[in-house]
Every structure is written in C-alpha cells, then in structure tokens.
Image 1 (cartoon, rainbow, N blue to C red):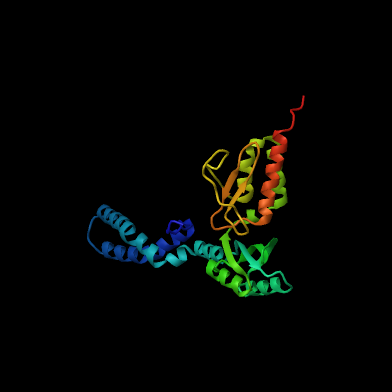
Image 2: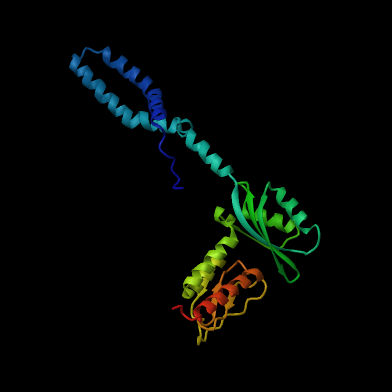
Length: 265
C-alpha cells in the first residue's frame, strides 16, 4: 500500500548477503594476507574493510541484484491478491420479458463474472435488478458497465463492495425493527443504516427547506412522520428503489405505533 516491499525473511536475506559478500571477502583476504603487516594489523584491516564493504556495498547490492528472489514470497502473495475475485454491487433496469436476465447473465459470463445474489424491484418501464457480483480482480468498473449495457441493461451502476453485501437483508431489517421498537427515537439512524444513506438536516417539521420528492430512480427519499416531522435521506449516485422506500415507511410506521403506545404499568 505504501509502495515499499515488506521485509524479506532472515534466511533469504542471509543467503543473499553471503552471495554478494563472499567474492568481496575473498579478494580482500587475498590482498591483505599477502602483505607484511603484523598479525594484529591484518586482523584490524580485515575487520574494518569487511564492515565497510558490508554496509556500503554488500547489502545495497544484494537488495538491488536479488530483489526478485528476496521478496519472492511477498510478490507471489501480491499476485494472488490481484487475481482474487472482487465483489461488486450492480443495478440496472431490464425489460420485464422472458430472456432479459439470461442475456445479461451471458454478457457477465464473458467477463468470468458470477452473480451471487439478485433482488428484483418493479419500476416503470421494466424491473430494476440489483446484483452482488463476483468478478476477477483485473476486471474494472468500466468493463462491468459495458457488459451490463451489452446485456440489455439500461442506466447501469456499479459500486465496489465487501462480503457484508451478502448478509441476510431480512435479518438486518428485523434487527433494525427491534431497535426501533425499543427506542423509537432511533428511527432516523436506523433508516439511514438500512438504506446506506445520509440524513439530510434542516428538513424537519416547520423547516423551510423542502427536499424534492423521490420518484422511481430518485436519490432523495422523504419519510413523513407525525411525531418526528418529515425525515429526508439522500444517497447521491444510487437511486432508491420502491422496495427500499416501502421498507423505510414501514419502519416509520412502527416507530409511530411504539411512540404513541401507552406505557405499560
């Protein structure tokens, strides 16, 4: 991530240093041993020379000359990471007729891309299909968009995602419903979490800031509540579907029921 290779293993580093130092050590010893210096002077000269050569010559040379071998394990791991499948979320509008999904699947298969999950939302003019895709690591966003268009998809969008996209959506919605049942004031945060959207401030009861209504494909969703005032959510670049709008409204209804329920003795 920082552009630097990780530290090589001690074994590989030792072998690399020996391979670079051994010729230098032999030449230095051959030159010094043949002189008529005292024994102590020879030892000092060899020690100083070997130390300087190791610091200034051997280690940098080993790092440059044997870089591929020193970092071979890390390089192999990097290649595996690059080639590992990546997860994407995708949305596109298809015509509501037989064979539409098959054509789209064949277009994605051309990129060795697998559909892991699919949710279908009826919209005007067809159906909005939402996918979780597993694609090879070298497949880019532009290639997925071209494949979706080639498969008959209209207005396609793709976003990188993680394995959390495979979590059971029904279980998540039930967990948020339980959270609202315990604390109705958690409604805005729960809906924002459910829709992966942000809360637009300044749109509560009595505010002059009026958000535009969200039709099919809209990126702004407004939920009216009698006790909290209208709550507006925004998700730029990722339009809300009718099903998501329905889920958010049901959570708002639950919060309103709980908020007006008489407290138990």
